[in-house]
Every structure is written in structure tokens, then in C-alpha cells.
Length: 140
Length: 140
DNA sequence: CTGGATCCTGCCAGATACTG
DNA sequence: CAGTATCTGGCAGGATCCAG
Image (cartoon, rainbow over all chains, first blue to last red; front, side, top):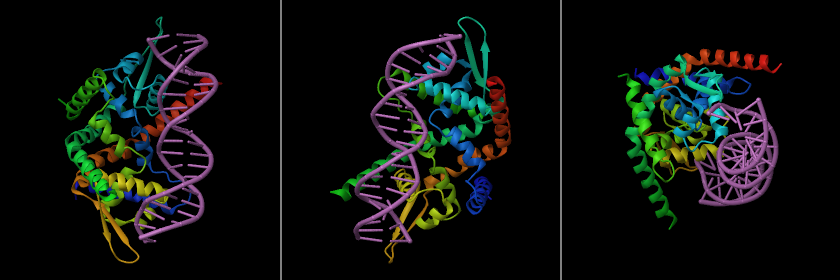
């Protein structure tokens, strides 16, 4: 049995259970993936993986996030226990964010995904070009 | 060096390059994750991991997706070369979707993530309850 | 059966200004 | 510095109808 098979099987069970039973679908996997699958969460986790950082540092590291979304993303991640937030009552105040042990435990599985993305990106890009080319051929 | 460190380092390099250079951010990792991070893609991949399936089968397997989004998700995945689409000119027509080799290569890294989600879900849930409780305490 | 096309809506997230 | 508050537009995505 391949390493993936067990996860697939488990996942399928969630799906079928949810699909059959009444009530809104509630699959732990979906729940978690919805969180870390959003636009900025993984970016934050990876950025904090290097070292704990303050709000402004994070903002500089990821320039194209708004303060609003930065705040929200950090709060959500803190809520899920993936990052820690430590306030220093200096003046002006400073806040340091860092990975919790739970957050660190996510690094390895996430690295596997990043590794995949990195290695397969050229394949994906090629597939896109091919697909778009074919679509254009059809349309003309 | 931990397995994650290399990925983190590579990722950070993308970030800094993108942040420094002009032009819109373009990080392969972000690009790929945006795709598989959307609401339905992973669900589709996992569902197709068991066996190739037809449009209606997929719709039944994931009841809470609309036809519109099912079509769109499948087309995007096909565009990226993750799934294959085979049309049988029967009548009425039937179309079978399946994982491409590239799609299958995603199963292992994705399984790692699902495994993590499954094992850590209770921790995350507990953290949420704790956080929300603390927030309530503050507000009253 | 497998979609495409169209209309319509909510909410997500960016911009901007303000605060402790 | 580290956020909040408010307003607003765009677009993701549902519902519905149509077509091959």
C-alpha cells in the first residue's frame, strides 16, 4: 500500500460519511485545508519559519499584503494555535510573532508540498501553454 | 539540516527576489498553491485518486459543489495537466476524468498534509476553543 | 448526460483614515 | 508601532435556463 493510499482512504471515508449524513459537510481535512489554503497563511508560516518576527517585519517581508489582511491572517493562525503572539509593553509597543510547536510540526508536510510545487512547476507551466494553445486553435 | 529547511530556504529566496525586484510578485510556489489551494481542487484530486470517474459521479461524490464550479475546477485541473479528460462519443455522451501521472505525483505530498491535518485536528480545535473563550472573557 | 451561457448576489479584500 | 473602522468595488460562486 502506497504511503498515499491510507490518507486517501481516510479522506474518502470522511467524504462519504459527510455526503450521506444530514447536516452541513464537516470534514476535519477540509476544515484545516481551508485555513492553511488561504492566500496568505502558508506565506506567513514559511516566513516565520526562519525566525520570529514583528508585525512590520512581516509586512516588509510580504509587501503585497495589506495591513488588514496581515492582521487577520495572523490572528487566525494564532487562534488555531499555529503561531504565538507576544506583546512587549515598550513604547512604542512591539509585538513578536513566532511559530508554536504545532506550527513547526506543519513545516515538514508543507515542505513536501513546496518541494513538489518547485519541481513540477515547469511541467504545469508547459501543460498550461499547451492547453491554452489548443484552445486557441479550436476557437479559430 | 531538517527536511523542511531546504524548502524554507528556497521559498524565502523566491520571496526576497520577488519583493526586491520590480513587477508583480511571481513565485512558482504561490502560483501552484493558489491553484491546489482553492476550495475544490484537492477534493477533486482525492476523489479521483480512488478511480477515474465521470462528471455525474464526481458531482454525487461531492454534493455541495455546483455544476458550474465542478466544470470550472475540472477544466483548471486539466489545464494544469493534473487530470485527464476522455470523451466517449456515446449517446448520451459520457466523459471520464482521471489523474494524470503528474496528478498522481501530487498524491504523496498531499497525503503528508492530510495526515498532518488529521492527526493535529484535535489540537487545532482545542486551540480555537481556548482562543475564543479568552476573547469572550476579555470582551465582558 | 455533460456541460455552456447568463444573470444576480454576498462577502472578501483593498484603500484610506484614524487611534492607543 | 501595531493595529482598528468604514466604505466600496470586484469577483467568486449559486441558480437557472439552454444546447449538443
